[in-house]
Image (cartoon, rainbow, N blue to C red; front, side, top):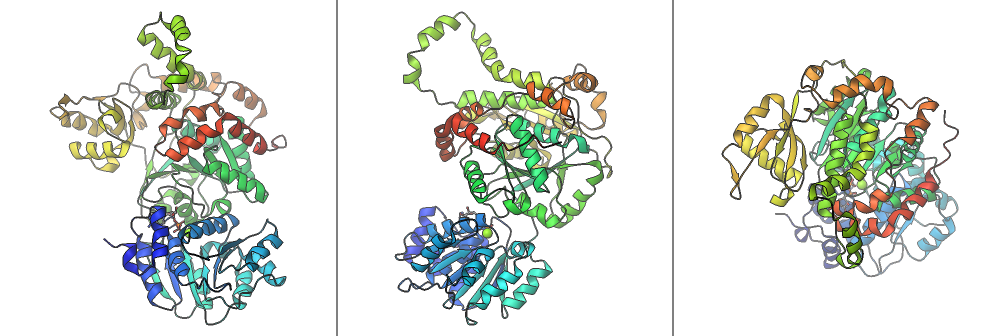
Length: 624
Ligand code: ADP
Ligand code: MG
């Protein structure tokens, strides 16, 4: 195993990494760090988003700084303010044990004089956005004549944002003898060109296929008609109650619109786009990081490179125009070895583009059906069951109320109680969704029908030590199916559900006939609820299915789940939608395995969430 220790990094830097909990270098770090430490060189580093490029250049850069001197010796250029701040705080952590190190962020939208003062105090490393740094150069607030290392981070994005001239001017202020390192997730021709322009014979380090999506990300798509896009989004969010996601839109206007509708509909959502002031963007990001916000709706530029941990889902509200962008989007999830899901909502017309994306990212998309109303209710129900299992009970505080509670409820049977408690929340979704229509667009262009799937039940769950991914492995092992043939593994306490191709269902049942777990017989059954995501036979199979009722009645009768493009429908829809106000966020803490999240979300409570929402709920009245 390659270790950070083997690279020749000094004690102080190693301690910083250790404190951060980095155990092993990532592949790009493994290649870049020793090379840079041993060679005085220009270099190009290409690797996917989320592979640890910041540390790849940051650690050797920090080591090469002379902290006795107060001159600016290293310059990192980054495309956006958010990234600039993110890199700065990351570098500060790496250098936490290096005495006398001064790292200063220079970016637009904040007081330039204050930044200049920080720089004057002796910033050996400046992390800057090109626009603001140029400003500083013009006003002679910064001296770059001693820069020995210049770094162009996220170079492709800096070009996309049209920073070439600024970069020209900035680099002209630095000595010709410096080293230049360029890092990028993609290598379009333009980056190739500037790498020639700014560097002499750069050493090139590529890790993986630079275009390939992370292998930890699953790609799914749904086909709906244009007018049902928003409804589809809502269903996807509702069907994943624990979602912590980013919804990508193509334009600022669309971003704003989607966020507003989500907020109106009671979700913890906010928008992030270029029209917000810097202060607003900061608050949004802060709220998102601390999980006061569950769904961030963002434009590509605004969300570029943002490193938020543990994002569960990226949702493409529509497919991006450029395939490269798809990669950047889906790279927001599945980071640092975690798994993630990238969902795309496409129209029948757009469906053919999935193929081109598949070719480039070298990964297959799975076509899924937008969950039916009843499937959403099922997800919500089991999420609730899970909450009941996981909730921390404060025995001491609750004790004083218990006698009264027992007095009131003592007459009910256990079963009655369970059903009633569960119904409190479940009813909201049921009311809203029970007659929801099927919004899957029929007949896609590429003729790729969705598979005929069966939902399976198994009597193993978290009590048996399983999580969705370990259960998936276990199922794979016992049934001989591949991971791709097993989907939607939802693990409850004592049992779980998963989905397989209908043709594989009998084989799965058979496989577990004689298998025991901890001396207990394993029971696997085809769940008699509607089989999910069925293709052609949807209408003819299974009598008495809710979905069919929904499909028939939905059009004339259902009030909430309709195209809300018309104003009349909107207010009606709002009044009968399930409330997802912030009271939901304090009860969900138990579901996270991340301790930090637990603490934060309960600290903030409902007021934090709702006042935040009010602040950004924005002026929606002008929408038509
Ligand atoms: P990139 O610039 O390639 O998109 P980042 O440098 O932003 O990626 O790193 C992504 C995340 O991975 C960051 O949160 C970072 O702290 C973390 N990380 C980087 N290197 C390691 C490592 N060796 N071990 C564990 N986590 C790491
Ligand atoms: Mg980066």
